[in-house]
Picture 1 (cartoon, helix red, strand yellow):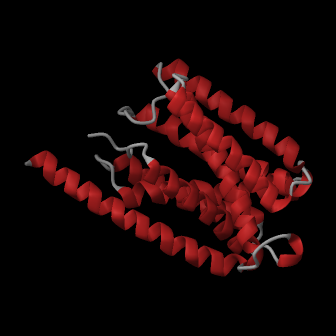
Picture 2 (spheres, helix red, strand yellow):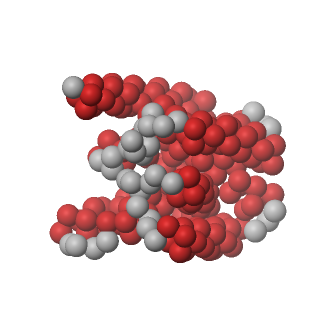
Length: 248
């Protein structure tokens, strides 16, 4: 049985919700709780490896495990990107270029090894590892790119959301009205939903003076967690119904 979800509208809604929660929760741990980027990254990477092991061990698609790994890559990606950009002083532009290179290398190695970049029919352990490595790098890249758009580009939080949202809409139109590679479109959308979540998370948490809605990291994280939990519950019920239908 396949261990990955179908790529539907609900998948993308949950992805954006999870990546936005990753942004607010990562900032909550590293800044609001003052744990720091390095220690937060170590804690969240440990959480990522724990959830990844659970995902690798399971024999079927289990929504709560799958989305726990997605959330783990998103929160760890937030603090790792901030550590690279701020603590190490690389800056958003340099950090983004490094992460783009790492993501492209991962995808190239995946293709060379598996002759496929499919995100719906991965059955080998090696393919799974490439899949989750690519997701970790793409979510880390999204934080750096989102912060670059919000802070250094002059667009601000709202402008960053509008720009990324427009690019995502262009991908949707390309999907429906052209025969462009679905795999390429998926990875473009997957990468772009991360900075969309990052900039949207900043929009939710930052103060009015900084162009945000001033919900704070705690309030925003709680709202997004409850929303994601509700969506996962719906996904679990659907998976249960599908399994019963398959067995019958």
